[in-house]
Length: 95
Image 1 (cartoon, rainbow, N blue to C red):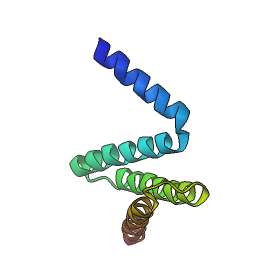
Image 2 (image 1 turned 60 degrees about the vertical axis):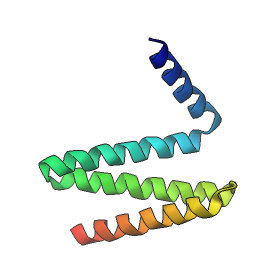
Image 3 (image 1 turned 30 degrees about the vertical axis):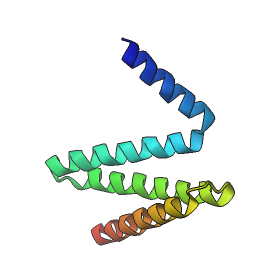
Image 4 (image 1 turned 90 degrees about the vertical axis):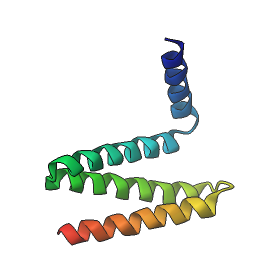
């Protein structure tokens, strides 16, 4: 029970102190879950929703780094641009 209480407190504090990063984390977790579901079902709506979450998380990272740069800004921007390019390419490939 202590483990779950510690985990819940960590999530709660992280959502209060860095809400943008918390939302990005939630979007990326949903992206991975939907990608896993798509892997089993091969249905298009799961993949499109996965790509939409990935694009949203990448844009959120780029905006957050433009407003308030962090010490690891270059790595974060590179990761966000790579995620954005791959997601947009896959999204346009499906359309």
